[in-house]
Image 1: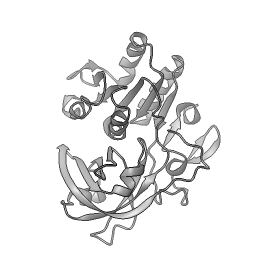
Image 2: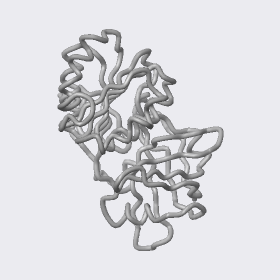
Image 3: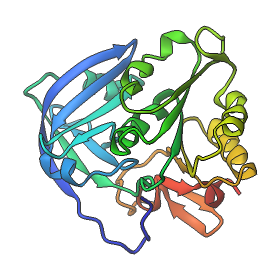
Image 4: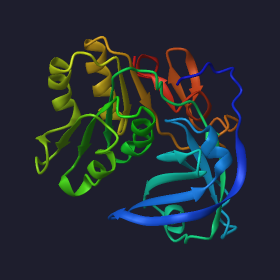
Length: 262
């Protein structure tokens, strides 16, 4: 749920034990840690900052969206793609090792929609996974990818949503095209969506936001921006909005679509 910017949020900085690490697809990894203080507070759409403790050369923390949080068991999970030296080091962590975790950070999605539609592409499907679990099957999901090989996500979502819609650029699975190709047809046939939550490439989110506005459905988008502190102090993740300059880490990462894609 998007909170007013003046609401103070509780957060923790802890050393968390790695409890699971597995490769889900080529260069895509699932990391689970035991962080009960943060798991208890985390909301869908929020993120944490992870710091690698084994190598002093990794000074900055890395922002990662929350894919799962279990307040009972105290575990949290993140799904990330190998993109450089930092994520390579993250992928080499083994169960029993520890990482520094700061969070939960930012403002998440509204979870009170009666029938939300989740729209995700690429790694944007990771934070939406937690949203699907938190809304207890009330939502449907529209998943987009380049080809069938990228859509291991379908197995992760199948027990968390009511309906699943799939698009691939090459037509190897589901409808050929992009999420924005299929979305108008979905909204014409399913007329009771009261909210759309989106995470993925910016061009996709802009397209989804435009279609949502045409159908008069509230839309929230999760932005990704390079950041350092994650607390709003360094200003590295500042963006322009209809309300002036805002920080993705502190004022987001979730925004109402009309605030950022006006």
